[in-house]
Amino acid sequence: MTDNITESASNLSLEELFPPIDNEQTLTVVPRGAEILASRLALAVEDCDAHIVNLNVTRFDSRSVPVEADLRIVGGNRLRIVRALDAAGYSVKGEEADESEADTFRDRVNELLLYLNIK
Image 1 (tube, rainbow, N blue to C red):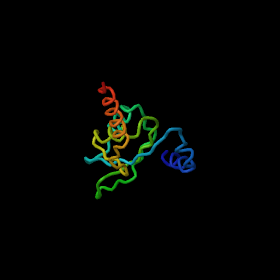
Image 2 (tube, rainbow, N blue to C red):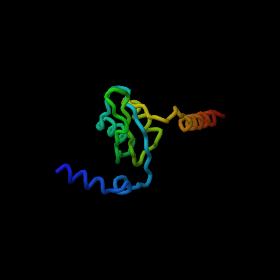
Image 3 (tube, rainbow, N blue to C red):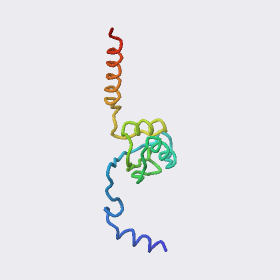
Image 4 (tube, rainbow, N blue to C red):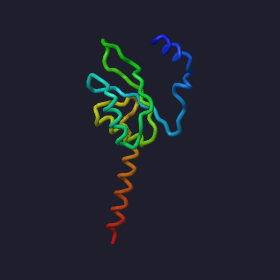
């Protein structure tokens, strides 16, 4: 039975396995603990109005830690997703603490408050 599954999977192209999706983004996550829990990842991502469409463990070696996984996500705001994953115990590789979007919003709110205080 497993030979049939392996045979049919090997006949599929990457395009069939991972069809392109509008508004998709890819993140590589590394757990700060010892394991990757799909349910914890899914909850963190879905709290940001997004969905995981693929989760692939890309590095798993019992002698080397950390484990890494690639997430293909549809929807949601990237900054919110990175923050939610961080709160769930996962670091996102290649994502610097880019607070530019939050800083811009904070600056605009401060300017609005200053404008409202002008008499």
